[in-house]
Image (cartoon, rainbow, N blue to C red):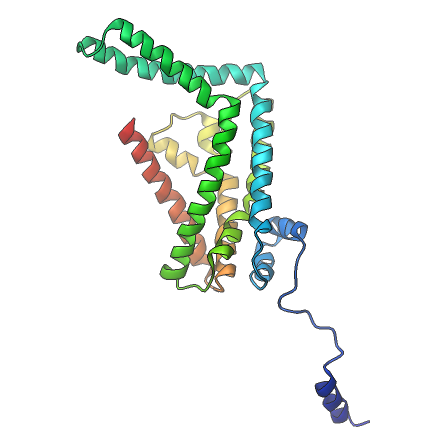
Length: 272
């Protein structure tokens, strides 16, 4: 048979050769593994299929479950609980110093100061206890997810001229949260092994630098898990917005991480 005849038949009936469709689906477990092993290829595939809420919701829920369990477990460790109480005492002492100035100026009486200190300690214990800490983690995690996705969407759409959706941005920001799940586990293990209350895996946390200082801020950026996470988010955004300029998206994500934290630190110092 003439090969051209075969080609003509195939053209009419459809090619019998297997072909990988552009919209091939991945299981969620494949996506999770791909975040760690091949984020570029993984988000290449994810970008070609309709966005699914499960792809950002499940990583966030996993993060919250692990974070809350870790939070309660660390509070059961006597040594870590003592360190936490010492941190609380330090904050109360700062408030006491401010109240002493008001007593000296005659703005309040000594009894008013003692009552205010007692109330301050009670409020701090309530809001920094394991239950309220867990509630805070849940609230701030979801607010942070939606807010950051909105910022990334606007920057990607208008500043970098990408073609994407807010739903896709949620996935680009949410799916890499599996990296933060691993970070929480590592922090919990290191805290117990080192008998040191760690907040993250940054150099600032390991060295115990005072918050609110430039040195602490700079050391806080030296965090392998945070760097890994934001790099993958940048890669994900580039893929979800159909761009080959991956470096631009990574730079955008890191710039907003640094600038955003600088603004928060400045606000904290202003209200402190």
